Image 1 (cartoon, helix red, strand yellow):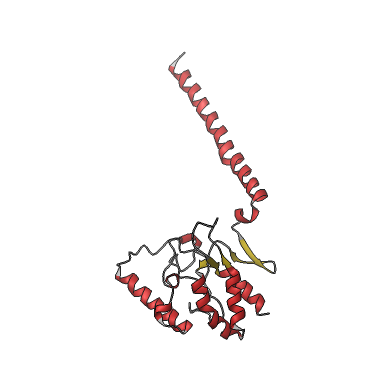
Image 2: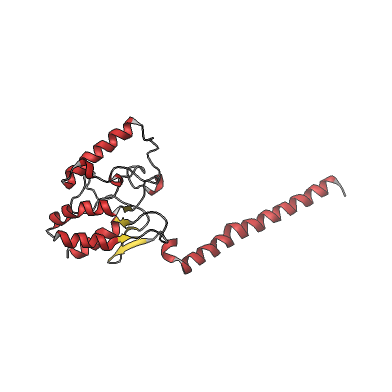
Length: 202
């Protein structure tokens, strides 16, 4: 068999293999996986959206800010932890600040946040919890600690003219335990808490 015929045969085999693999891995496999996702875990596959009155207002998995157009905290809402993802909670720019604990810029930023949170909540700066001062490693964490949520309860209640005890009870009811009882820490999803707050306020 000539070298030219051998090369042509090998090229034909290679092209058929590419076509079959492209069809299998580029079309069939994604369609099967997507179909399974949409059938078995539809909400998770679609980003765990949270809807209010049929309108999607966010995701269970991605945090968001509750600030005005000037990036000032809206005191009638529970506030999320800081975010270093893009301009804040940018799902396309997930990241931490990448500043080390001895970095003077980070130290100054933490003190600035401590002062702002203490002033907003009307507490001593030493009472401000760590998650109110630092961003998560992804910059997209939708949760805060129960301590930070409870710290905000009196301010939110006063802004909305609600009983502080009712708002604190709302926070306690929103606390999620550790995953499988061992992973992570107890936490509060800020978006879900604010939705429950808006329902309490109606």
